[in-house]
Image 1 (cartoon, rainbow, N blue to C red):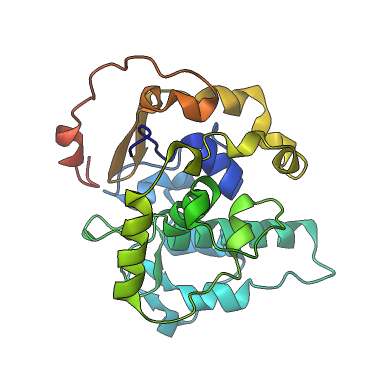
Image 2: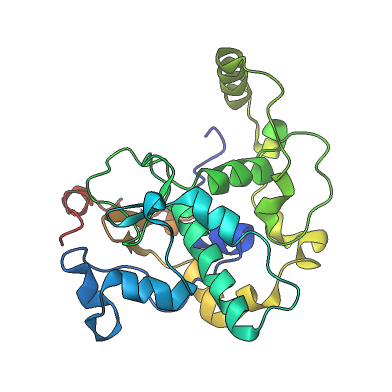
Length: 260
C-alpha cells in the first residue's frame, strides 16, 4: 500500500470473530485420525457423543458431513434447552464456523471431521474475515448504511448483498479505489474507537489473549501454515514502525502436508 504494509492479525480474529487466541491448539496430524480422539474411539462414535446423534447416511461422505444438515439441525436453539443441549449447539456452531468461514475450501459445501483435507489445494480461506477487515479499515471501500453494529464486529455486514452481477465493473472500480488510496483512507486502529469498546466482549481483552496479538510466530492448522509477522505492521497496534527483521522464508513449511 502507498501508506505502508497492513495485514490481518490475531487481534482482528479476536475482534471480528470473537474467537479466543490463547488455548488448546486446534491442529494435529491427519494420519491415524482416530488416534487423536479420546481413548482412540471411532470417529463416528466421537461424533455422536459431541452432537447427540448421527446425520442421515445420504448426508455423509467418507469423513465429511453435508453443511446443510448441520445448518438445518442446529440453526435454532430450543427455548427450553438444557445445559447439555446448549453445549451441543455450541459445538455445532464452532464446527460450522471453522468449516465455512475460517478454513473454507471448495469441497462441495461439506464439512470435514478432520478439520481440513490435505488433498484440497484450492482453499477459499476465511473470506468473511477478509471482507469485514477491509470494510472496517478502508473507509473508501466500505458500503454505506451499516452504521449500527454489535459484537461480533464481522456481523455488522451480515445483510450486505451486492446490487448487481457486474463483476468485471466492480473489479475495475475496486482497483481504482486501491490506486487512489491515501493515508487517511486507512484506519490503523479501528478497535480503539469508543463505540467499539462499548460492545466488545471483555473476555477477548484479557492479558492472556492480548499479549499474543503481537507475537511473531507461525500459525499452524493441520496442513495450513502461515507466518504471523506483526513486527511489520506496528502502527496497527498504536506503535511507530521500526525497521523489521528480514522476512522469514517458510517455503519449506508450505511444502509440508497433513501427514507431517
